[in-house]
Amino acid sequence: MPKTLLKAVSGAVVLGALLALPRYVESPYALHMMILLFLSVSQGQSWNILGGYAGQHSVGHAAYFGVGAYTTMMLMHTWQIAPWFGVWFGMALVVVVALAIGSICFRLRGPYFVLASIAVAEILRLSAINLTTLTNGAEGILATDLPAFRIGGRVVTEFLTKVPFYYIGLVLALLTLAITYWVQHSKLGYFLQAIREDQDAAHSLGISISRYKNIALVISAVLTSLAGSFYGIYVGFVDPPTVLGLDVSVQIMLICIIGGMGTLWGPVLGALVLVPLSEALRSNLITEALVQVGLVSAESRVGLFLKENLAHAHVLLYGILVVLVILFMPEGLMGFVRKLASRRKREA
Amino acid sequence: MAILEIKHVSKFFGGLAANSDVSFEVEEGAIMGLIGPNGAGKTTLFNCITGYYPPSKGEIFFKGRRMNGLEPDRVCRLGMVRTWQKVRPLAKLSVVDNVMVGALARTSSLRIARERAMAQLEVVHLAHRAEALAGGLPIGERKKLEVARALATEPQLLLLDEVMGGLNPAESEEIIQLILDIKGRGLTQMVIEHDMKAIMRISDRIVVLNSGEKLTEGSPQEVVTNPDVISAYLGESHA
Image 1 (cartoon, each protein chain N blue to C red):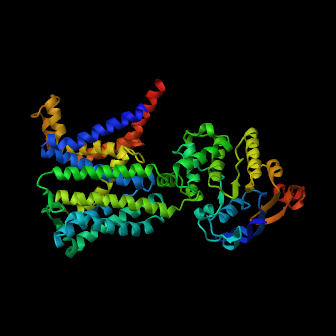
Image 2: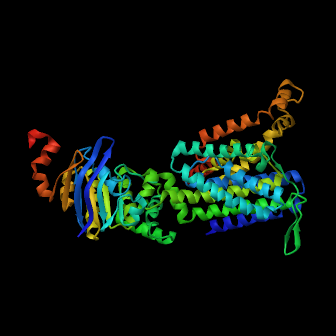
Image 3: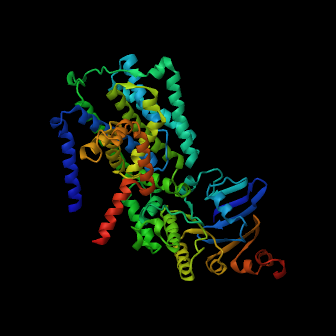
């Protein structure tokens, strides 16, 4: 009992701190990082339901992210439909796309499913580039003028700062977390894990494989499309590579794989590691830190070399890290944490 | 009354007839033994009956209902479930969670499913391992888990595919007792087994398959004294 109490109290403290944060932190950069974190948590958590629990490793989640982002942005840009109405169209469209993809791809297993999921996302990316009348092609859609959000005539927010986006992101992250919790503690979660562990055995135990795979896919896709819509209105710009590219799919998947697939907190851990890491690599914080500590002199050859090249090498370093995690922590950070915990328990 | 009727079932893989024109009936409440040399088509027949392969020819009736073309999950929910010769534990789930997956075929409540799963684990004497990971069980316990998980789906007909394969004599004896217990509860069973002594003890009737065809059918006594059966197993010179 004290353990659950401890969990409840720490959960309430973290939630309280997250709710209060924008009151005390005004730095737009800090808020931006938090928003990226929330976005990553919701992306990773959405993928987790299909990839982690049901074991269907989609490398095409950019399809759902992109369709959500594009639909909301196109509706806002072309017909001035406010995004809080637009997202529903995005989600509805994604359900159609997901069921179409599911009916084709779920006939395939293992690597064939992975290849098919990549192919579908690439088809959508190429369509977005070439259907210029609809999507504005490679130029993308710029729509930064958000209408004020009103409830009953009263203006709630005009989206002038990052604070409203912070709260929307927080709600999105909590929503995906809550849905994952529900999945884990329901018949659905048991069936998805049975399919992941052994599809034929699951089939013999009365589980309709195609039905439950499609349910997992639709939940996963709809949540990913929500995240996509949020990304679109937050950044104010979408184009094919940033929301439909293969690297978007990989990014979404990595959050979950590095954090720990099929666990509630895995994607949260994954986002906590990957978001700061990619930011540090991108903005060359690492070179600065090395110089600050005095390990490397800024004027020395090494210092200049790092300054010149480390920022460009961030994708490379990122890739190396991913390889290391997959080699040495095959169950992700959550698996590593659990192993440590069980070792401590044994020693006690 | 026959709970399962196999009528002229054939299964072809390309030119190979894994089953050809097999017919027999399984009486309700009985144990039907299914024996035959390796490659006789026993497991293929199980796969046809439980919906993994559609039969190429012939018909299968369960409780009077035509089963051809039904998916395995439908077959299970209609009351017919199989275990696997090569056991298929859900490795990363605990033992009780494995059995719960079976129980959830009949209820949506996790609480009820858990109670029923624990009850089935008691039946197979595996309750003390409930929280262990299924992937870490030794073979004897994996076989019991297969049976408990199948029982949890509340079947009327249980198809056991070599549940004694790879077990030591003490473990086999335990499974034999388990099968007889299950019979005592009124469940019909069809059992594939290589251990002749065991199959003779538990079966009410035995069907012998050889090269995909039904060689003979009868009581254990009739089957074991049949010269065709002896020659199928040991070669012509022994018949």
